[in-house]
Amino acid sequence: MTDTTSRTASRASRAAAPKPVRGPWLTNRRRRLLTGLALVTPALAVVTVFFIVPLIMTFWMSLHDWPLLGEHRFIGLDNYRRAFQDSEWLHAIRFTLEYTLIITPVLLIVALALAFLVHRGGRAARVFQSVFFLPVVIGFAAAAYLWLYLAQPGLGPLSDLAAKLGIAGRDTNWFATATSGLLLVCLMVVWKVAGMQMVLLLSGLQSIPVEVNEAALIDGAGPWKTFRYVTVPLLRPTLALVLVFSVAGSLLAFDQFYIMTSGGPSNGTITAVYQIYRTSFINFELGYGAALSAMLMVVLAAVSALQMLLLRKTDN
Image 1: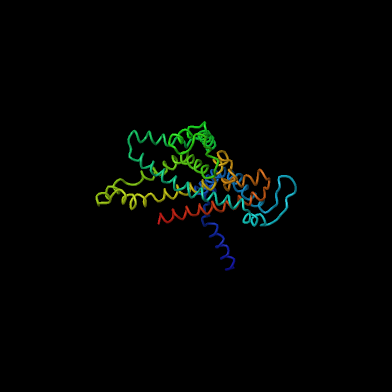
Image 2 (image 1 turned 90 degrees about the vertical axis):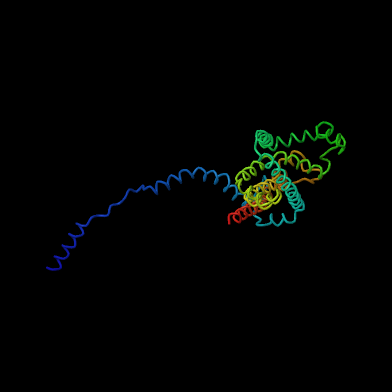
């Protein structure tokens, strides 16, 4: 009787106890999460379709003998082994590195000089800033064709200017040697790209407080010491960004050499991307071209990692 009474009392107490109130399923946190997923989904779809899938396909192709027509044959890492023994590919890599080592400091010096020139302010500085930036809006192909016309022997204005300065004759072919062709391409790239780097460096200069430079001048630091010990350290993140962009763009150089020099003379101006193009779409060795692309992508990934390292050291 006692047990029956206790069980009845416990049931009554559980029935009388208030039931936990469940909140709505779509809480504010879940709503924010679903909203974020909905906003990110289109970008994820684009990245998946146009980057991740082609990337996986490239690596898969690089492991095969993949002709344009015919059967695909799995060969493992043979394409990568072949690349390290391919004299044309090694020459293209060497030339690309030489071009990068030449154009990167030249671009940085010219862009930094232009940034300091327009940093002074005033109406004239704004006009010069617009003029220096104008070539940026022109496509690389259009700029290359323009300079190809300007350098035509006996026709282009550059030939007349070189003749008046006594540098070369009016009928000199600037693309007859790899050295002169590379020089002309570098001039075109500086004219085309320096304006963009100028804008990036100018934004970095404008972010430096005026009081810092004034304090350095009051302490007796001259213009050179102020630039070296004040401006450059504070401009370091922008410099790192500009350098990485410049190096990455130089390693991927293709349009200017394809249009202006056609890789000549004697294949002396073949870049890495140009060699990948010739391998894939002229020789139709798609598997080997995919392997070369993968190797170049590793180099670009290393450059990006260097950028992150430089920026992290700056933040610390």
